[in-house]
Image 1 (tube, rainbow, N blue to C red):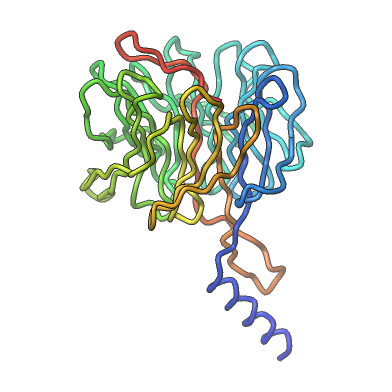
Image 2 (cartoon, rainbow, N blue to C red; image 1 turned 180 degrees about the vertical axis):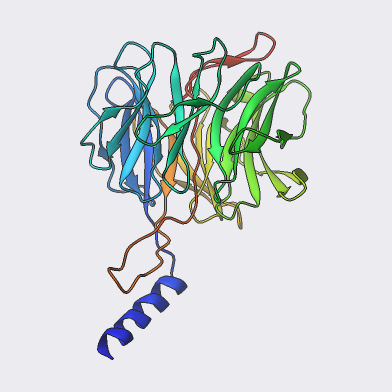
Length: 329
C-alpha cells in the first residue's frame, strides 16, 4: 500500500510538472569546435570532447545516455558516438568520404547521417553500432536528416530539379514529398520535427546568407503527405544560423548574433515571443540539441524514457547558384 501511494504520487508529479533535461551544443571557446552540454536553463556548461580537430553537431540518443556527433579528428569528417560524460568515444563510419550530420532514430536502433560516398551528398542510415550502412536517398543533394518522433519518416533538405527545398520520405526511402514552400532566391534548411510530430521547423536563407534568413513552421497532414500551413516565426532582427525545436514543443532554440559579433544560443518562446539567452561566452556557440526526459514511470525500476526527437544541424558549406552558406558553429 505504501509503495502504491509513493508510485501514484510520483506519477502525478511527473504528469503535471515540466521536467527539463540537457542541451548538447558545440563551442569554439577552446580554439576549435568541441562538444559541450548544459542545463536547459543555460547553467552547468561542461566540456565533453578534448581534441585538436573540430567536433560538432551533437545529437542525443533517445535514452539520453549517449551523444552522436561529427568529428574531423581522422583527417576527414566521420560520425562518432560517446557517453554523455565524454567517455567511450567510438568512430562509427570509418570511411574516406565525408560523413556527418548524424541523428538517432527514436527507437535507438538506427542513425541517419549525410555522406558523399557515392559522389554526391545524400542521406544514409546505419545501425547504431555503425553496421549495415544503407543509402536512403539518391538525389542531386540531400543533407540534414531528421527522424519523425514516431520513426516512420525522415525529413531533410535536398535538391530536386535544381531547387533546394525541405522534403520528407518514409524511413525506407520511399514516397518523397515536399514540406517547404518555395521562396524565390532562398535556400531551405531542415531543422527538425516538433515533439508531437505535427510540424516541421525549417529555415529560409535568402541567397544562402545568414544575414538574410527567416525561420518557418510547416504544419503537416501526415496521412496525405502534404503541408497545410506555413508560418514565419517572428524572431528579432539578428543574423540567424541553425535552429532546433525545444524539447517542450513550445519553444525553439536558435543560434544568433548581432552584427559583427559572435554566435550565442537563445531560447525563443513561441507563446509570448520572449527571447532567453542561454550562452554568453567570448567565443561562438551553436548547434543546440535538447534532450528532455519526459518520464513514464515503471513500478519495476522507475525507468526514464525518451518522448521525442530533436534537431541536428549541418556543418558544410552549401550553396545555391554560387551563393555559399558560411560554416556555422
